[in-house]
Image (cartoon, rainbow, N blue to C red; front, side, top):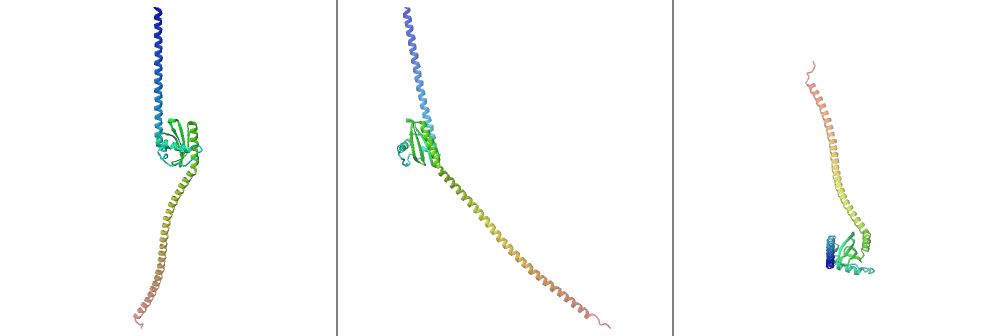
Length: 247
């Protein structure tokens, strides 16, 4: 009887242990499933966020997928990769991770989550120039860095030309402003000179008039003095004729 009780007690303990292990395994499986679901949701959320950012940056929506592309040399599979990337952009399957612009040149790193594949593109305006495809993130970063550096070098002359054009246009505007100011000042000088000439002519006329008037005045004074002398002489004569003769 004691042996049977011990055996039954052992069976109960073993069954409890098995049940506990099963429960732990189920809990672990549920936790793993939940973790995987959360990771998937996080990945989707991240992809959506990057997708929204890429839409804002505009590479995936600027018509590059529909633009006729320049032919590649075919040594690195660029032609096939370009066509493949264009189709993925049209289908909305890739996410824009990085983009660098220098002038009309640009470099982008796009990611295809379904196959964990990176597409690194070098483009000018809307035309893809080269596209490198890789599943190695370190190589993707290295190629992107090289393409980004290339855009800076390629755009150097373009940027310098734009700056020189802007500087020349600015200089032309300054020249026009200075010419306009010079024209206004020249007009003021011409008016002043004309007025000065008129004033000089008037002054000369006034001086001539003064000389004439002074000559007339001198003549009048001389005539007046002569008449005054004549009057005095006549007065003396008249006075002498009226005096009585002496006895």
